[in-house]
Length: 124
View 1 (cartoon, rainbow, N blue to C red):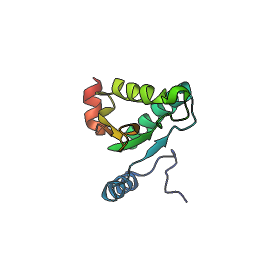
View 2: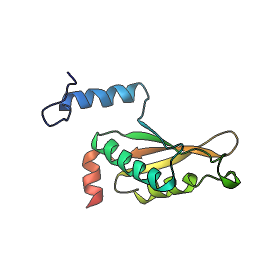
View 3: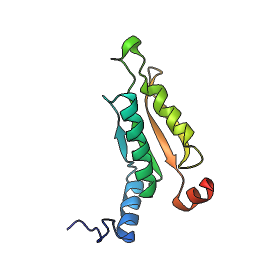
């Protein structure tokens, strides 16, 4: 038994419990885009953000890599993914920040999502 209803969705209390446990433990859903081309990464990111928002998550993490194995050592996802997330700011995305490491390069970002009620007002 998965705890899901006939429609395939979790009961409200179970979703709330899952979100609260995730928040208390400092966990966030993660999307790892390593090995994907730009088109597949964009599709995966769009789906991930939509699903996380629908599930009521406040924060997610997206890993796109630094591009060390890319031509010239510059990963195309380092531009494409943040640009996509920036374009969603105001609708699904409340804010985001790149996670810069000690070498000064980023390979991931944290994304904060609007609460579901706030999203509805922002989109309209």
